[in-house]
Length: 156
Image 1: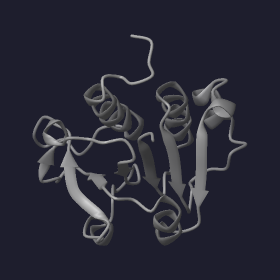
Image 2: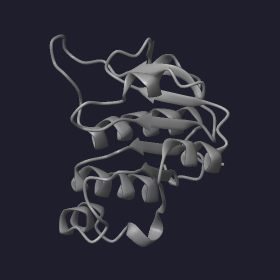
Image 3: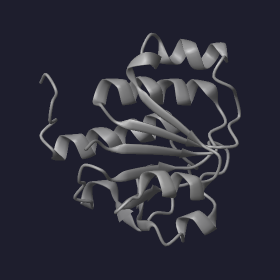
């Protein structure tokens, strides 16, 4: 089983396009929870994903409850600037859900406290800065999780 990236209500098509490419290259799945700030015909989404759209597993869910029902997750890591665990302190396993919030506001408090969430996770940043780009944050998290699995299936 692969890692599963979940974007909750993403707003910027280029970030999701980059995540589509990330999913294709790493074998991860990408799950998007509506509402989306774009549609799949958006030129910026297509351009950012290049020719990887057909190579990625992308699923759109109407609600977070629909996503949970589909994913049946054992472990969900909610990435947020106020996370209590460092991303390097987690021992990731295939099947883990790596969840990220909207570009403008991140994950809502009620989602960080959702019973499915195993831990809130932070990426290091300089003080007084708000957040890292969504696609970049997802890339860091996926590559750390994959690294811990010895880059299984990859040409290294």
